Image (cartoon, rainbow, N blue to C red; front, side, top):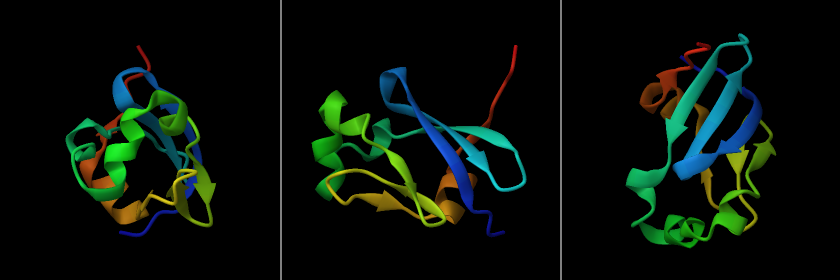
Length: 81
């Protein structure tokens, strides 16, 4: 399933609040990926917090990005309570 990202908000502990084009909100934990390649740089919280929507997905100022299908598959539904 391909759903574009509408918005992203960095949260504590290297989590992201993602809103997909169907208005579904999901939480993605970036922590497991902070030991690989360009994602190692995101350990710097200042850089991590530069996350933004780029076209249909997200990216950071260091040019790291993740595809929306991966983000959807690996994220958890957002619990509003």
